[in-house]
Length: 235
Image: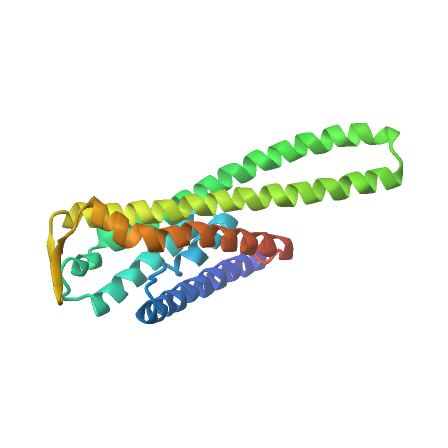
């Protein structure tokens, strides 16, 4: 009973800290966006990390937190702004992010199980082959094998994070476009623009999404591997 309580307390602590980090990063993203041309979804990073290290419930929870945080920020900053005011709708801000956390976790879990099964079979084969090797040869082989597995795990984590970034972009922008397609947005001192696929592609995807697709997987994979080695999420 005491062990279960400790596990529950650790899970609550992990999710609470992660949720707080999402809020901080999203606020930071708004500050950065105010002074630059970039509006990155920094709050997505904790979702991508924890979803790979915990179960689907944690991924779904943190994805929902990320969505709710985006909704609140949109309600504060974009209320009354043509087209962008619709970002406060839950099916635009919350639903796609919840799906990102859920799917990312499920994919990471499936890949992890497949790799564990493969590693178990490989270890069994290596044990049988070790009979004819010296201790130095076994140590050198194991060192090389560990390095290969670390590299493999990094790129698997990179791929899962890349999938999460794409799901976030497609889900959010798809819902936004479906809701606002054809809406005319007035521009101060410039000609009004019509929201359509081309506008979304050139205005948002060409800058923010490309940066996220390149940077976020690199950062996420590095953090995931570091936390795995440190056993931070080991309950």
